[in-house]
Image (cartoon, rainbow, N blue to C red; front, side, top):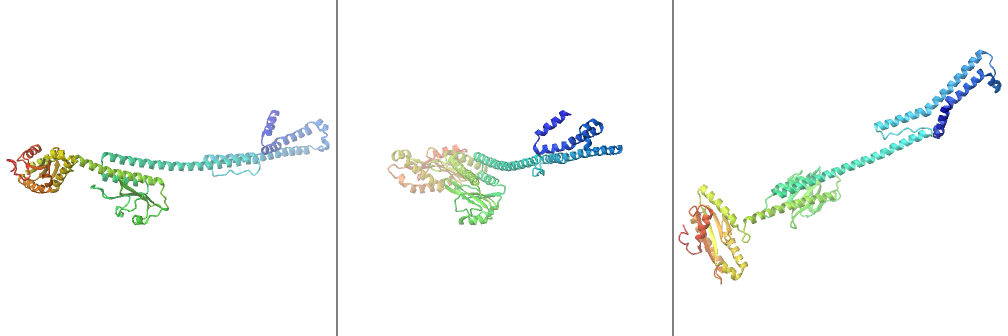
Length: 483
């Protein structure tokens, strides 16, 4: 018993001040006072020597009546029980109940996650009140941290969305790059560019207005998520231009802007070799919207892809042209003419139709070249080729052979018709090239004629026959050279 009491009082010394007072008072009411009263009763009734020694008779009159003694005992016992009960009630109200309530509220906060809830602060200014306040501060700190985490989560979502947009943009650019590298038709590439640009904004649209470029054939107006009929004339202004809540359109662009429904708009010029070929744009219809610089950079990248697509098509056309054209004169080269002659012969045989061939050769060109130089010789060949090209019909094909012969394939023409054409050309050529024929180093123009199937059934047969029948223009063809 003494060990228990010593441990209890040692604990009281270590307890906080407010809780220590309450524990001391509770212990006094529940234990100390009842024990003292029991000791007094025991000394009064069971130990007369103790009563005499402490002269208790002076303080408590001797009750001679047994009934009085009994009532006296009952009263003391009742008073002891009442005091102990009051101590337990005090302990329950002041310590146990607040601790239980605090524990329940803390548990509800932890289980339900109600960090906006505040724990009721104890009225007494003691450690339980401090604990309640500390718990409220802890929940407030948790609320603050959770709010920061939510903000970080929102920021992370925004970053993820931005990353997804960049991935979509890069994938679109890669897809466009693959089409550019594979030689896909220009209209297909331009349609993909407009479509991919529109998908960069969830509520966006895109447009492309182009000017005619050389001899290319492609759609000049195209849109995505927008009515193409809203597009009219190409804007005069070059750009790049951003139209939003802070940047109204210029007077030159106001008509186009109003035609499109007054949207937020970015316009980026499409250029070819420093010349404007058109304009690429994207937009949306959000209210109070402001374009960020990265949007302008994005449209600029797609405009560059558009420029590359058009330039690639131009270069591809030129490459194809160079593959079948003679570099000096601009007429078809020998390989193409021979292939085309074979095709015309096959067609003529299938439909039982004639196919004629003219061959023009310049006699004395080597001496002319040595005397006046290569540039003068080339100038003469260019003039002859251009003259013949302009003198025949669109279905006829004019080409140059390596030996400086100019050859004309005449579909649907027989030998008589070919001879008439050669005579007409000969008369005009004599007049046109008189300066070359009567100079210090005279040149002589010769012509040879052949026809399928009279002179052969292959291209080589007709070329050999025409070469063998060459004669000066204005001179009667040698024997066998005319039909």
